[in-house]
Image (cartoon, rainbow, N blue to C red; front, side, top):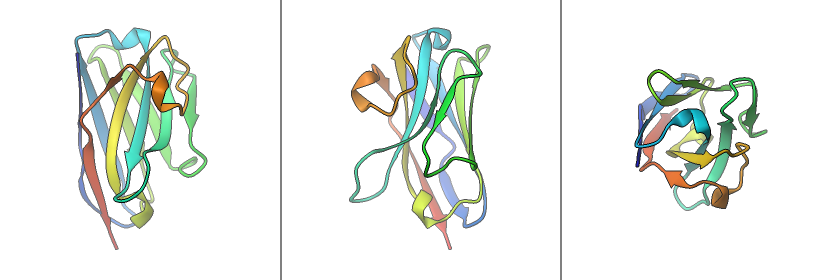
Length: 123
């Protein structure tokens, strides 16, 4: 099983990002997806998640209103889109999969993790 996060890079403040999480070795239709981020020197933080049902999403209050998590079953890929970025959004972003899960912010709920993709927001 492999979750491959991509799309990170250098983004100007006020800009937007779109991260992808390509899933190999499991059927994403049966898994909730979670997105986390970790800034240098800080703990891993839940950003948001989406259950198998496309209507059930769970976003952190810190990014609510700026974030959209979506899924493409045909590509077995999940996406994180975020706009109006600032320096607080800098960090390594990780995707994770939870079999039959509820897209909770609980790290231990997730069965599989990607390697992370670095996002740096410049002012």
